[in-house]
Amino acid sequence: MPAAPFLTGQVAIVTGASAGIGRATASLLAAEGASVVLAARRAARLEGLAAEINQDGPGRALVVPTDVSDDAQLERLVATARETFGPIDILVNNAGYVAVSPVADLDPAKLDAIMRVNFRAPVLATRLVLPDMLARGSGAIVNIGSASSKRGWPTGTPYVASKFALRGFALCLFEEVRRSNIRVVNVYPDFVASELFAAAGTRLEHAERAIPPRDVAATIVNALRLDGRTTAVEIDMAPTDMGG
Image (cartoon, rainbow, N blue to C red; front, side, top):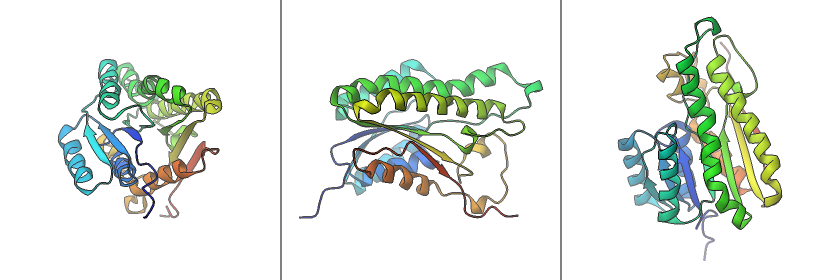
């Protein structure tokens, strides 16, 4: 008999699962046998993805509409996932949004909002799933950063600061949990073909050369496929050709 998909029996939560990297990652985790909990604000999109996963298998999908900036909704997300499928094995912190502004014109409310989604929510979601992982001595936390986790650019302060903060958290987390056999995988893609920047009113040139979300998803799954003694801690991704 052929071997079962390598994530059979595992439970994964993916935030920001309604589009882009989150959608692609949820689909691929399910294709490898995981039971995937889909979290985002756009419930209709999540329902469509769940229908595809539950029809095609081998994994299963559960929709839990969630605004990750709301602490109570985050708690409900993790509790529902655990009650439905069991202890959490994988958390993909992918939800995020972009806000750009010169520092002189920075709106404090926008700064608070982007830090709440891009930094605070991943920290709190991780805090909620860690007890399951620590108790079993296994698990994986995947954080979707950005090339902006490592470099700044004009008007990027709100977004860049949130991604630098996420990276700092992730590297501290890795040092805390590595001896408990918990993986922390941090992915820093540059220029992904997604809705993120368009939603912020930012136009990116040469979009046809951007990284497909499915390639980021494949990179995540390949990192999870590594021998249990190994973690890919920081993964940089870039388009091969961004010439003019």
